[in-house]
Image (cartoon, rainbow, N blue to C red; front, top):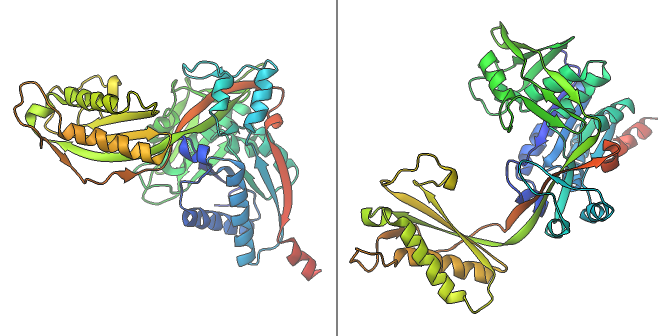
Length: 434
């Protein structure tokens, strides 16, 4: 198929705040190695650039370093000829944000969040800037064969080589939006198979490569509109993509022809920041409610449990939170659920506690779940047993983290928040040959 580039978005904020705050990857290390090895071998065989954004899930400096190490190992393993690698890091020290805020640069909240004050930054363990296409373009100008980048706008890493080839921001960012999640824009679902994008003037042809998949107008348009407050807008640092006038047409059996997007540039560069911080140790217990008298009074049972916790800890100064996730009754949408069943058949409750230390988190969780079991409810004569504990064991969960930053800050150039480091991979092999 003779592609000009091999590109993959490797990260997201979908997995929640902990991976960023704790600086850990979620995707298994052997998965990451397998994918990078397949891409690198083919990119070097074809002598075309390979571009990876949001390295190792969260795009922190650790993630970039991890992927660079994998590239080095694969190159050594397969005795590849030397090539130029660009590592783009976009992690932002929290202390730098504090300095900028103190100097009068506001951190503007997105999607209903308040602007961030110093207290928010004090709760932030780690932050990353979401870069646009410009750092990738700079690396390509410098002749990079492989680009490993930190946290990025999903569509920016696909837009960069198109912009460098002279295409408009309209079609460049639009192509990125359609292709960012590989075969998620195809049907039927087959995890992350590969797709091919062919750009001609202001049109992109998106094709499924797997013979069992098809890119249809419905699948491509549906993907273009997902995960956004406004389904027709995709924001990047420096503007947004307007997709309200797009046209999707079936071109051949596995290809959809898409056009009509318009990039609206902004007079200033607002770069998005993602930040997370640890709030405490977590414990979890699972309990099932099948008794009809308890299911109709489940909120009273939960309040009984909360009251007993308050009695136990009211004078101790203990700092804790406890959550009762009711699956079968608003477990997913919580108070946003528009059609909550009044009398569910059964309810599964995930009791989650978060506290300053593991001992307190365990005690809070244990008391919370047992008091669901022992709850005294009006009109019910039984003394216990209306709840079924999956196990008496309190499950040790990973620590709890919160999103602290979903904000933008104005900067003069997107390069202000990133740095590019170049290296020659397998350079010693070249020297040995010489």
